Length: 257
Length: 291
Image (cartoon, rainbow over all chains, first blue to last red; front, side):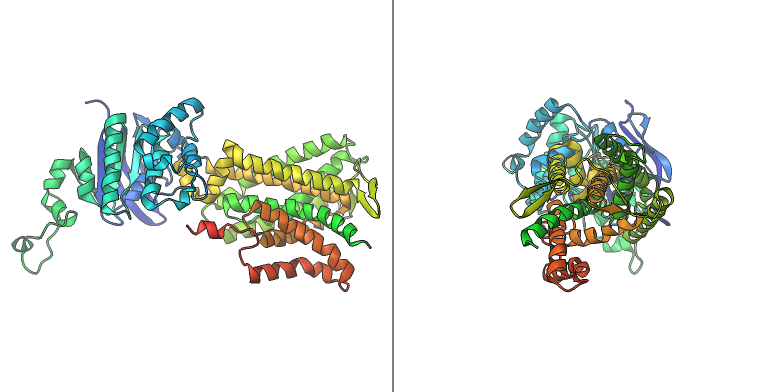
């Protein structure tokens, strides 16, 4: 197998005295969609923020296509081709949709190919075409999410980090967003690392997945394996607990096996 | 005295306040911190120009001297941001405020050491000349102040709307985190914003010194400009200019029509009034930001 595109090794990150990542190692191959599952506070967002350089890693390494980028400034990491679609959209509210997209291309200087890219992107996000001149802050949540994805796409990234793209959206919109993510992956070959709480939706589009708990990877495997695992079903997919398995009054311990 | 005459003088003064207020707003918008050293940066820039241009200084041609002073002040502001302000990145805003107040003091005393505490005047090619329209006398210095301010504000406006860096600065002020995510070098842009406001401060200082005298304590003018920025709506560039003009015009009118001493209070009285009636200032973006 070829060398993985993104390799994260033993990453440790602190928020002040609080250790948020306790040695996380993941790999993403070229052309793959990989998801990272976990509950609130498991360290999913921290992982993405550390990869994109917003947070400094205390220990460990992030390498893109074999090149270590751990100590790079955030803008340098973007230039290496890691695009981050942050949690909660984070568009530029008082700028037009078009200006938002052009800022996404801030690290690129080839204006003509940016324009071509824009055409390709509008194919995937027809809702944005008619709203080019509208202020991004006045878009609906789903449209803002699409804008955030489009803004990352225009960098023509090697890998896209998506932080809970379905957060706060209706089930119908979540499905739509994930459909677009799948199409972008299949048509344009964009490699994606998706962080989600909504395990079923994420696993349906991913080829592999990792489960994060309290800053550690506690389980990893193919999407099918993850969907089959009893603990995943119980804690993420809401399958009914088998009362005999929990053994009466004791709380059953998660083993992730 | 003709009220119209007062108005013209007030407008010219107001332009200086407006330019200073502009510096406040620029830095506030891009970095969310208030730079209380703005007035002292103005004073420092003016003194640099003064020693470059005046006859007992380097006696350079006026334009050349001003350009060198502007460039020097831009570099100085850039370096100040890079070495001091950036260290407080992520700290409470209050610490930045205290730091800038301290920077102001340092600049004031350095200026005192170099140039002395006596008021000095800048020798300009347009001093003492005037145009007369009926009963109104329009000094060349007033005309230059108004024209330069308009050009500078127009230039800044175009810069923010049409250039890549200007757009990126707007992006930083609207959503700093997202600016990081799209690969904008946020920290370098903060330094550049400081450089730009160093430039506006120097120009304000030159215009101020051209109309009167300057001494190290002139930096306290910054407080009046701060009031102007609040009146205009902190965070709005046109608001800063308008606020400056209001303060500038009200001062001479209050001086002429109100009892002695009230002209000093007038700008702050207006600031209080605005804060009570329209807390976000005359030109506020708050309504739009609520989305």
